[in-house]
Image 1 (cartoon, rainbow, N blue to C red):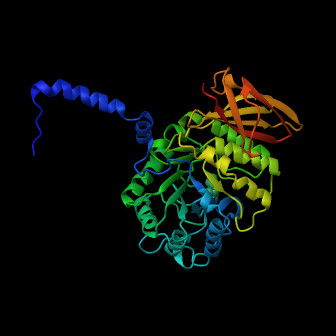
Image 2: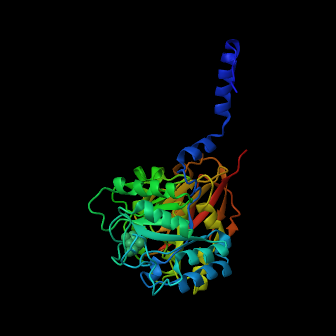
Image 3: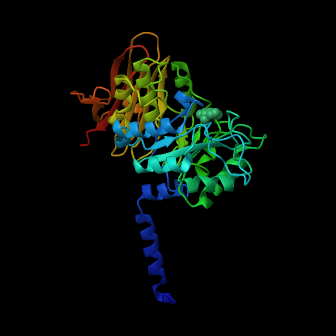
Length: 401
Ligand code: GAL
């Protein structure tokens, strides 16, 4: 059928089209432009990964039991949906057809059966491989040269998330190796969240949004205060590049693994949340202390991470080891995190002018770790007393006149 517009009507149609295109909400337009074709990662991914606690000591039984625990503890209900198997799940040799083979001694039922189990619990299954000839443990094949075949295998197994590492990379640039897997995943016909793990080598924040849904900005985290803080700082440099569909990744959570104090883990979780980092639990969720639960289950902090605006916070003020981090949230609200990195107690203030609030605006402050709304309305700023290596986290809501 042919559709003709008479010449006389043409200017009116043009004007109407311009008006309509401007009527599209700006956020929706921005959202669409930023998303990869797989349409995943509208908010940072949440789940669990085996590496930080178990390293290569993994098997199908513990993955199943982890999925069970994610549901029975209530973590799944809070949004922690991905169960991600890291390195060491496959045999070192491919089969005669070049297919990956799940390790017979530890994953005898195969990955498809595991995916079916995880899906039956309402969760999603993630897996790991490498953009090189071997994975970083050296115990299983990487996908370099096998991208199409491996992506198809993952899709057939029902995989929902792929972490793609950077070892044995033959000296080829990540910008040449990683997009090959992006295309292979697209061709495989199943939406698979694509997590780039090239450790920040070639500033992936600058190109990762066209290739994956998240990109590691740092080398591996260790379960110590110094390591955790340095990952947060290295990651912060790229804050402007995070957006719905693509996130900076300062590595997985160490909360619950025992190397930091409770207050330090609270700082860790608060920093990851406000930085819009993936919230991938790295401890044994079958056996969590009450302190660990208190941290990982803090819905108010999770809500900051999952806020639909998707803007990563910045370190807006630093005085010695005292820091103020802040970033906008939907509904004109602001997330605020004040950290004392000193070895002694101290007080520290946040000024509205540093965090994008008009100085004279009265503000209601919700303390996300005390779970209470402060009685005072604050004008111009807010100051807190902090123990060594601890923080306070707030959502600030301006009182609009
Ligand atoms: C590293 C990666 C870690 C973990 C490990 C497995 O390169 O950064 O998160 O996946 O390999 O060998």
